[in-house]
Amino acid sequence: MTVLDPTLSAPAPAAAGALIAQDIRKAYGGRPVLRGVSFTVPAGRRVALTGPSGSGKTTLLNCLGGIDRPDAGRVWLQGRTLDGADAAGLARLRRERIGTVFQFFHLLPTLSAAENVELPLQLLGVPRAEREARVAALLARVGLEARATARPGELSGGEQQRVALARALVHRPALLLADEPTGNLDSAAGARVLALLRELSDETGTALVLVTHSEEAAAVCHERIRLRDGAIER
Image 1: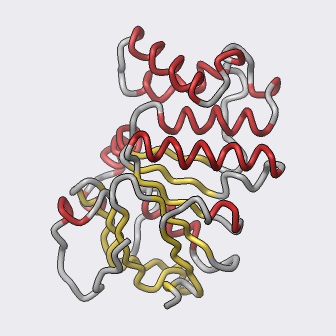
Image 2 (image 1 turned 45 degrees about the vertical axis):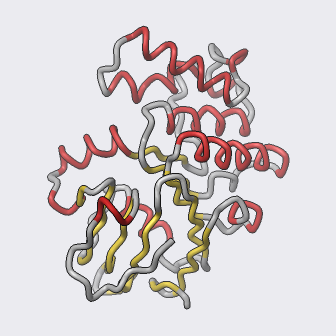
């Protein structure tokens, strides 16, 4: 991880990292939530965002993923800045280059495990044969090939999160965002998900930004960024 000088103009994004956050600022109702956050995450590196509740972690994650727009500053992903994209462009970028894992899984309850994993590929128009091959390979990789036809309600919490992880990676994103991915799991299931996050990011070269209060989750990352009152704690 490299901490950037927020006074710089646009960096050389292609050389600096898969993800660049430069002087990100965000306020709600006049209350500052992010106060000039800058860092880079190279491809294949894992960064944990830690800090007390209300420190700005989830707001920062939303800005990195194009769900929310910063009031000032820039986010770059693979050399492309997000601030110039309209709503349709941001949606397309998220579908193509970003994967997200949530604390509460967010699987579609009427779809099977395999259908949930396949959905991002359908949205991208990937041919059926390739979709099926990718889904089968990832379900096998997360140890759920025998549960491909099960619906979320038939799966344990740990199994649902492994399906969610497969769904987040099936389109081969440049960036994986994880918001408390083990917060709703017991210790054994959480440890398995963390091991998969570490192994799969190594295998795919995907940059990972992980929001967590868990010491165990932060320990699988190469670097930690601690936020306090919307700024990086030095």
